[in-house]
Each structure stands twice: as C-alpha cells, then as structure tokens.
Length: 309
Image (cartoon, rainbow, N blue to C red):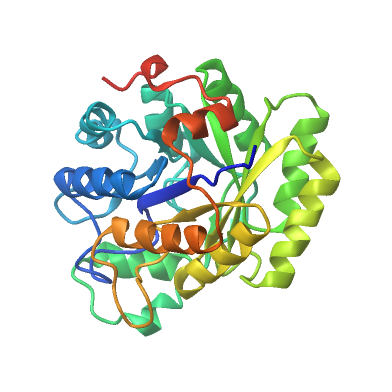
C-alpha cells in the first residue's frame, strides 16, 4: 500500500513578529480560526505556539494555550503538537510547561544547542510596533538556543511518561547524531518522527544536496525505523517540501516557518500554504494522510488520552 503524506502546519511560532505580517495569528480567536481552516485544507497535524494577546510576544504560559487548545481539540480531529521549543531565548523549564500540563499526543523536541540567527530580519523589517520585537531579533546575535543533552533527556523522559511522542527537530546533521545517541541508549520509542528544519541561520542550508545528506545520514543511523518530514524556512518552504515529498518525506508548512504564499505575496491564512503544498503533493500523484492515518503511522496515543479538555 502506498504511503500517504502527512501535512503538518505550524500555525504561529516565536520567529516572526506581528509587525512583519498583519496576517500572523496572535489572539486565541485567530489561532483557532487559522488552525481549523488549516486542518480543513488538509493539515493532519497542527504545531502550536501561543502569544500574548496584548502585544503578541511569544509565551509558554499554559493559561494562554488554554484559551485556544480546548476549542481546536473539540472542533476538529487534528493531531495537536505542542512546542517545547517555545522561543530561542526562553529557559528550558519555561518551554516545557504547556507540554507537561496538556500531555499532548505529539510535541516538538529540538535536538541540539545552536546559534539561531534572527537578527538579519532587522534589515528586511525596520518598523516594529513593540519594543520586544527589536530586542528579540537583536539578542539572537549574542545568545544561544540552549538544548543540552541533559535538557533533551529531561524533556524526552517526562514526555514519554505522559504518553507523548516527539517530532524530533534536527536543524543540522549533528542533531541527527545526537538523536542516535538516545537510540543507542534505548531511550527512544519508535517509529521516530524526524523533522529536517532547513534554512535557519545557524543551521544547515536549504538546498537539495543538504537534504540528501540529511536523509542518507538518517538512513544510515536508523534504517527504516523512522518517518521524516521537511521544513524549508522562508522563501525555500515550498521548494524544499516539493523536493522532500518527491524523495518520500512528509511536509510541514505554516506561518511559523514562512510568511509567504508565493513571491512577494504574504499568506493571509495558514490554510493558503496548506492548499499550496497539497496541490504540489497531488501534482506528484501523492495522497494526503488524514489525522487518524498520521496517528497510525506515528503510533500516537489518541486525542482522548490527552489533558486537553
């Protein structure tokens, strides 16, 4: 039976700011609207962050997640994937709070400490509404996105205790080897879901040669005991998804990763990008997976076993 492709949608994240696009969902109502439309368009998985509703700054306060998670959980069948990445300048303890509280089916887990350079955006966007936006981008030049081996092990252990599985986010080849360490130690639960995140300054570049290298490395280390997906940051989003899908990957889109829906055109909704990548997949004669099919492929516990009520 031909494997179907899982579309993940990262609805709103910590990288882009409200000043960069008026269409970025900030309030709970906006996150709900974007999420439900993205799921209806074909996103089996919704990867979710939260923002303060006053000024739009990223937050890991479970109370902010609680403003939108129950409605999304009730109104659609999507797999809810809660971030443990949060924002590059948050503490690990802060980043873990919503995942530990809501015990989702799936959570993201960043696989290594890295430079996470957002400061080049200051040259492209020079008018900001809020002080925190400029400060966050400037700080990325002198700070690290901290994910030590101990941090990773803590998140992984506590998540597995709650029945949560992980989207292992690998921004470079070394992160795949970091994941393999836990594979060797017998700490992982298969099948592994590995997300190749490409095009972030400080990580691997978004091009075909690098994608092939990431895939060959994962094949060498994990054999066929994993599912994989591709993220292309910014303008590379659809190109990397198309390349990955042609090689057998799942795909991720969303306004966390790119604000665009074609050259020079801002995406008004996350669903715009979901529809675009779905057209690409169907043009490649690939079928899109439902949420239940994604649950089966990733061996998830089911939406009724979370703490989202």
